[in-house]
Image (cartoon, rainbow, N blue to C red; front, side, top):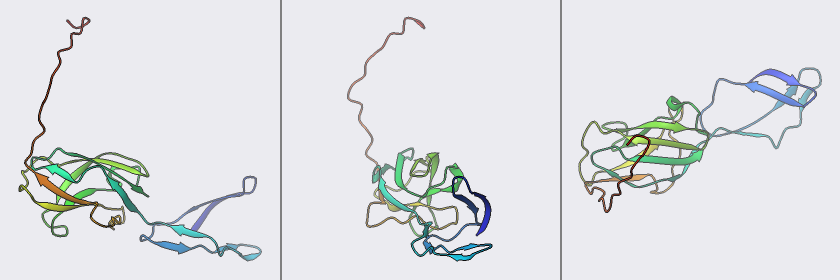
Length: 163
């Protein structure tokens, strides 16, 4: 870790490091003049996890919007790509990220190819380090179905400005 700046007034240390594999790391602080500073309770957590996913079924025709709630996602769309994986990385279906922040990612499943009815895959959020965000149990299992939504009613609305 490389210290960038120390603000004595606010007692804030701004540090930058080149990244790390997911996990927890003990933090040691060494003062340039006085040596090691007691820091036994300091831990840096760079892990990520999916806590919920908005749905577990998707259309075989693609276009389904998914929302992932979790921890430690990036704010840049390309930082956390999402895929529906069937056999590791082979033959995966992309879920294109529409919005992202540190705790929520929304993506839309690729509609360029038809997926087999009943096919089951696992939704995977990748971290920038190419690791997968942990997803416990079966909550990230996706089943593709050919059941289409049914339109039950429609209402005509007149816009007097546009006639």
